[in-house]
Picture 1 (tube, rainbow, N blue to C red):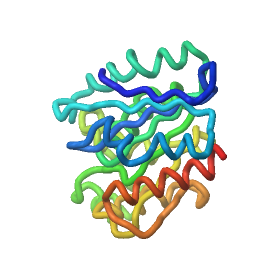
Picture 2 (picture 1 turned 90 degrees about the vertical axis):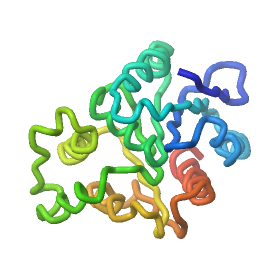
Picture 3 (picture 1 turned 90 degrees about the horizontal axis):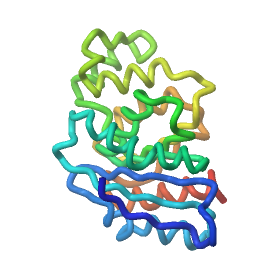
Picture 4 (picture 1 turned 30 degrees about the horizontal axis):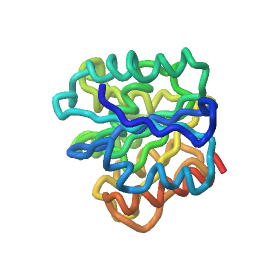
Length: 213
């Protein structure tokens, strides 16, 4: 699994490592171009970053979870560092699917404008009425979109942190608000903006300010 590693400016490995998964048609380099590493440097945070490249062939293919686990997550666990998994758009869906599959291997999730399933599914949840009453059905075993909503529905209040950020004008904001309704207010950041890197960069800076500064 190809990735770009940006270590903290310190002689030893940082105590926290954050892995970022991009959206469709984006890659690891886009995080650098959007200033994600620069934001960490400007705040002088002791935080290691890994930006991962995902191939479109991975969509709907659980092999990406296996590869992410063997190449990125387990080495971090062996090193004894705190590990956060972040995802943007489609990368957010994959990050949630990883958390649902291996709930004890991550110390936190940071989701920026995650893709949370097709509109038919989110409408079904909203009309249940709501996530508490919605039943994912047997398809949740094979359908990653239903599987991640089952994880969200059953996620315990004491579970590892999940941070959600999105723009008010994001085309997926209806689904984002469904997820936001399951989280404490401090774990949700909504700003002006759409489904674009300018918005995600501001959300990333806000996340760093609230969680690592």
